[in-house]
Length: 532
Ligand code: ADP
Image (cartoon, rainbow, N blue to C red; front, side):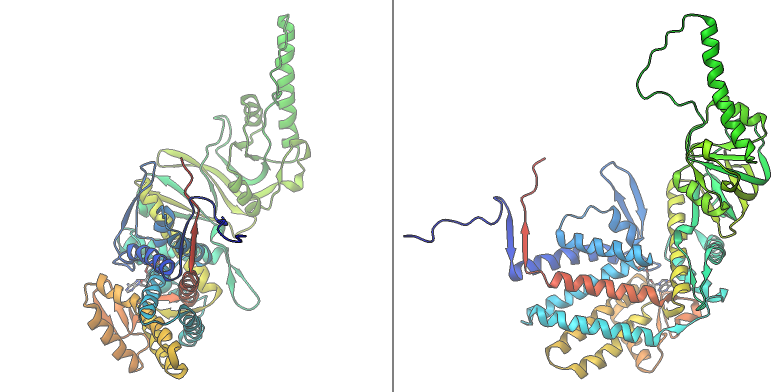
């Protein structure tokens, strides 16, 4: 009686399985490959990547978050790293390139330890301890700042914006100031003195044409729409705004109905009936006191005519997200049926006006009931420029949100990584044993960031690292690399290269957690790819 001999199939036919060290090595290799791609994009002298998607659309950028989003990564471990990078981007909106590069470095160092026959569990333990200690050290070396101090805010924004293409100091200066004004306008001051806002609270509207320097901050909401009818006013002061997600049209039946019209009288009656319904709608709107109508749906020509006769300014087919922004900004309420519209549903703005922007017309809703509504109207010659400016503004707003939320900063240019590495080595010595090696590996991985920055600055990486270690051991905790000028500086804050603590914190955490996740895997079970 053979109890064996019959193969037990637990995996689907065609599945591939890789186990143990082989699996681990394969994963590490894939993740490192991704990190290698991003490495050269790090910092203000980072190079751009040209990404071509399957439709042939081209994106040129050195923004880590954009690169990982657009790249079509195949390997599961690299995909995992992409997910982690995206999560980092969603959470703090910055530090994506650094997080991926650090994760790659942590895995390379882990590989060296594996070569010395150190078990993955020990490496994981060591990395976990190192992470905890690194976060503690970060908090210790961070500098508390006053969130209402504009100069400090400027410094942090400049560091972020400088590493992105936006064409010249004039543009950087303008965008920096605009982002700060926008952030301080939308932010709510909490009782504990901390300011909170969401980056989405600042509406960014792009309009092709003109110069980047024509980009403007509007205290209100800008709609990429025209006033629907030439007979309507182009400017309404003391606007009482009806926000509708209903169409000002006579509803067409869902099914195709055939109406037999047998006489011209019947035809007239039919048209008149339609006009009557539309006139009633407009009467109803006017009776609430509204002098502006903004709707998500369409407005029939006949209705436009009646609205114009009443002196009401109307805009149609507005995006849902814009309608919701208007709701918040004007204090109005979106109503789904004209029949239900009441005077208290109307929003308020001091001015609604159509203005010419380049070759187009746009509607500006300004002086809203809620003064926290702002729009940045971005101008630029091409879609590529507009997108890059939008990304830079979002980065700037993210950085501001981070530093307003946790008002602490750390020096950039690799200074913080060196400082943390130095202290981690002391800590490692206290722990001892094989874990000590893992904690030291963590410290070396952190130094990968200044090594790369040195390289992009045209400096000798190792020599620079030695110099920085020397400065830091002398207590110069702000010593780092001035990448733009290609020199080592004893104090990075003297050239305004500082970052929010929250970003550094999250960058190191994200990278360490990703590395640990990959190190824990000792089995890859892959289903056979679906046949296309
Ligand atoms: P990430 O996606 O990680 O934010 P960046 O390309 O924005 O990547 O690079 C951020 C790194 O560049 C940080 O380590 C930051 O300290 C450093 N950095 C930014 N500006 C400068 C500068 N002028 N000199 C030196 N380092 C800088």
